[in-house]
Length: 102
Image 1 (cartoon, helix red, strand yellow):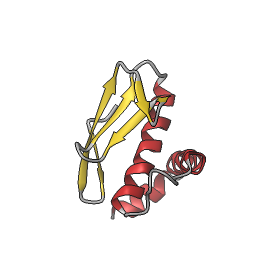
Image 2 (cartoon, one colour):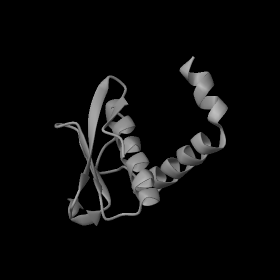
Image 3 (tube, helix red, strand yellow):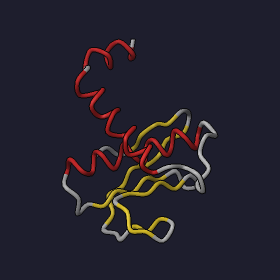
Image 4 (cartoon, one colour):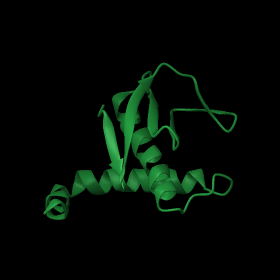
C-alpha cells in the first residue's frame, strides 16, 4: 500500500485500518476524511480489493476537491464503476501513464 496520494493540491495520507470503518451507518472497506486528509483502507481485505477500495476513495477525493460531491447525492454505484474503469485504464495502458507524466 502507498503512504499518500496527492489529489489536486492536497496530500491525503493512506493508512491501513483494523476497522470497522463505518460511513453513513454502513460498514465499508474504506473511508476518506476530507478534514484530516486521510484515507483508511481495511487491512483485512485482499490486496486486490484494497487497490479497488483505494481507487474508490480517490474518486470521492477528486469529487470533493473539485467541488462536485454532495454526500447526500453522490451515487456510490457510479463511483464503483469509475474506480473499476480507472484501474482497468491504468493497467491496460501503461504508455498512457508515461505520456501523461511528460
